[in-house]
Length: 101
Image (cartoon, rainbow, N blue to C red; front, side, top):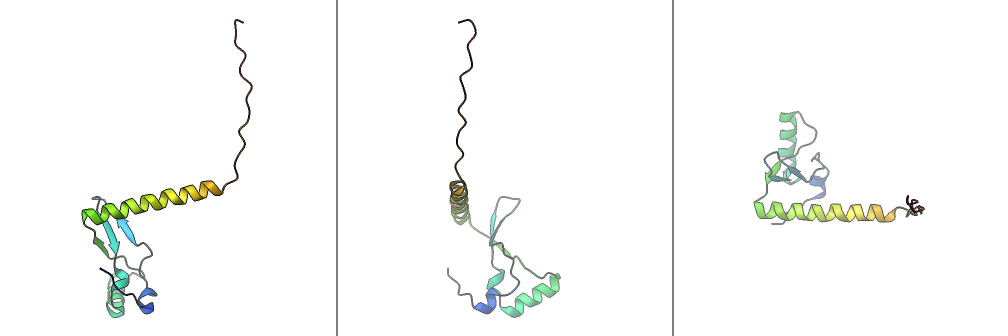
């Protein structure tokens, strides 16, 4: 399912987190930015919150795909970070003298 998000919808106080992991192991996707402006404002006032995270649980298949993509993204980010660091030269060590010779 694809949903169009207008610029007005994107500028509201939707929480920046796109997904969350619940303590029961489920994966939730944030749909707060999909709410009409009036509904978003009413919820914000009623809850006393400036930002909202409205989580909808993903089915097992979709959750597994999300977790796999996050794992891939994390591995890529780590590789880029480590690859951009200057390489350290290994210190050469003299072999230890053996006793009894």
